[in-house]
Image (cartoon, rainbow, N blue to C red; front, side, top):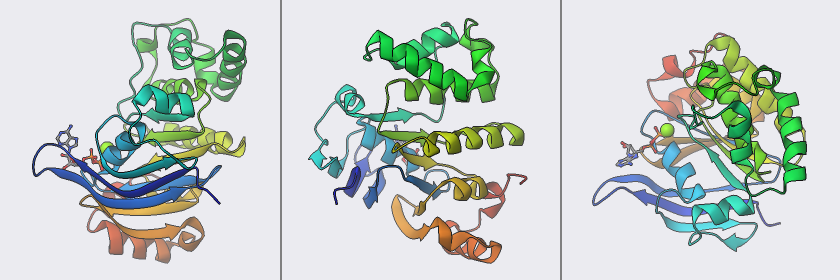
Length: 250
Ligand SMILES: Nc1ncnc2c1ncn2[C@@H]1O[C@H](COP(=O)(O)OP(=O)(O)O)[C@@H](O)[C@H]1O
Ligand SMILES: [Mg+2]
């Protein structure tokens, strides 16, 4: 079977000598959630940005079996690859509605309305503020808007970069809950970057552990059901940073 996304021997360099990602390979299947875990600077965002076509990379990127490595970002978006960056890049000057429309600008207007309705149903918090300036939303609401905007184009693959960053625990839980609903809804695949190991494990199907730009470990979520197994993976792959990974208060 052909994977939805096949990342083969991916490397990302920022200028001479600055290698952020080294020889990374993994597969993403339709409807599955794949997590990339690792400390700050491990290369997680660089991998996602390479898949989205936002940074140059070496190696091979296949999407639905086709080589997308040479395609510009907008063509990757057209094919269904959407990146929601770590710093939710919503447009503060625009209203919530306008931000959503922006996310679906290449979608026929009738479909766009249907999609917007579905997204607002998923995120009632922002539905009630649809005509407000996006800058007035709380951090959690902005994250919902950023995810909603990403969904507006009808992606096949959603690349979510630290969606819980900076959110209070209650909101983190809410965002994850909605992600659970999104994934239950069809064959959308998600690649998720998170520091929040416990929440991530509840949502995802498989996890890749990164250190220094390389994948150093792999687990299926089933293998991490108990605390001991989780701790073992943290010790083995994430080094001495469990505090920041466990800062959720489940
Ligand atoms: N635009 C950039 N220019 C130069 N170096 C960068 C740039 N973006 C990231 N890096 C470096 O690449 C490495 C990986 O960064 P990043 O992919 O952002 O990691 P993560 O998302 O896991 O925190 C880090 O050493 C970081 O400093
Ligand atoms: Mg990052």
